[in-house]
Length: 124
Image (cartoon, rainbow, N blue to C red; front, side):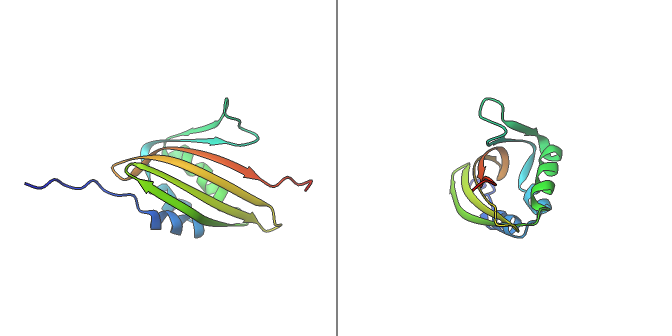
């Protein structure tokens, strides 16, 4: 008697969503009850920005991927139910952003994500 394999995470769908700036495609990778935390200069580790559920995550993805910038999935590592990836971005004015994410999966869907991001300062 065999056992059914649990669904895997689709890293190519992640790449297509990020590089195609397709917020809807990215949202499809999240479980309904997913949680995302963002840590950066404005939302520091003791007070991260936290989004609960797909609707709050949708609003953030719609905002980010509607901006005049390019996005590139640089690296993606999947080990069991854990995914880590690096995304590099550049605004039309040349400002660069680098984000690292660590995600936990359940049944191939993202249930928890922490994003650490940094961007160029205007003064430089």
